[in-house]
Length: 326
Image (cartoon, rainbow, N blue to C red):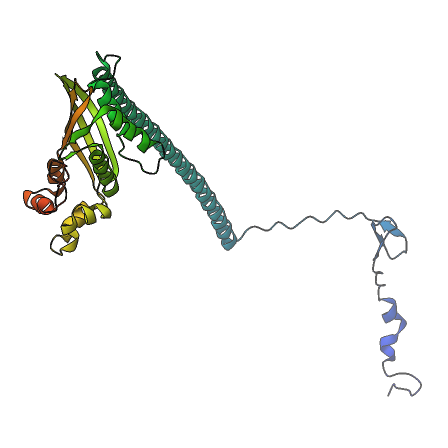
């Protein structure tokens, strides 16, 4: 046996021939950063070698299929949003243009209406001027300077055009002065006589009717008298119904007629005749009448209701006060 206690059992494997055949392993190169931040490599011999590495390039990744679809959808959504904004801008511009167009139409219409109104008012004023001029020529033609039936009648209509205004302090005095100076003391006035009868008639008219107006339309001289064409306007109030047409308010049957007459404005054509007394130099009689019947018939629309209105009224169809109650 070739073993010995003083030698290991694998001694043949550790012989010089075996160990000498083994080649040396190369030392691993070491890397370290230089002072300038560059990378240096030290080989097995221990001498460092400078090795400048190229900068890292970013990785280029090709878009996958899903990413391209998402980007495409984003581009479409952006395009749709832009289109929507453009549509809103165009719609707002269209709305503003339409608004300006409507404003222009309203402005032109207002100007046209104003022009038409001015034209209509101008025509009315011209008609009124022509009417007044005609009346002036009719009244003032061939009037002597001394007081006569012409001057008395024209002054009468001037002072009594709006009735007797008891609230004014000077008006009743001027009216009474005219009657005392130009009328005979026993002057005939419709169904009454005397200056007091004339004033009483006027006071009743102005107290029981509202907004009384007596307008002179023209004068015609015939002999010793003057005939005046007149237009009388009055408004029916509750006081009128109670005092002039009392039967309409006391009867339930006639109450609808009273409602129909209330607050109505009556316009009556009529005439007034002034008779002159040349010997006395004053007006001897004043006779007036107005067509109340026609105005009432126009208002009520039928003869039956018109007849019921005048049946027990204190005024006649020719606008004269009745001497006694019916």
